[in-house]
Length: 282
Image (cartoon, rainbow, N blue to C red):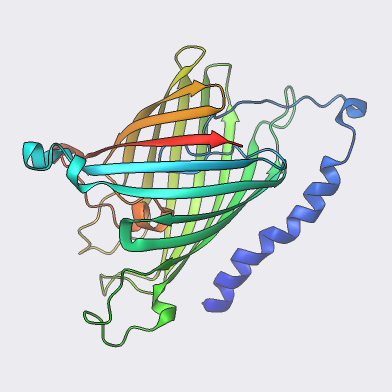
């Protein structure tokens, strides 16, 4: 299984060289015209979008997820129990990004690579397809609670294919088949390798505002697992070099393995979290 996961992580990278060669072709000579602005943010809400940072640009994304609204005034509706994720994403090329982040949720460090495989053409190929891979280290696991803990148990991986279509000037949607693996899982009956399908969309409300939503359908969750599928809804506000995303979600964790594998909130119980993502380009 380790060799399979390594293969899944590495294989897509080999396609980048081919993609770079294609990018060098003069699109004017072929008459190809591509759709743009399918999504404005690097994330829809929780899930990665097909948007990439431009070549030689650096984006800083600060994500804040407050505690549960269910706790009411005792935690000032979650403001006392916030978690934060700081993420730097650099555009190596227009079609290749690398990132590094740190989240206070489970004290997770993560590195990622995101790469465009193909683009939606006007009157041509109907989808933009982007690959995303990440590797994370969970530093919050404690040897006091898990005496047999080794470094390898802290490691997790994610592989995603992001398939998006801009239907018209207002509406875009995305499917995100996802494989993620945690070397340590808290539920004994839960497979370490897990599968999910992300579904997301964006509807443009005005020049600067859009309504965003995404949902993660976990496909092999253990029967006795207390965790839930993540569902999120929010709005994007674009202001020049900033994209400000505000949302409500039942997932407090912001890494893919966290919100797909360990979402504990329940919308029907009011156990939901308010949060925001603030993106700044440099």
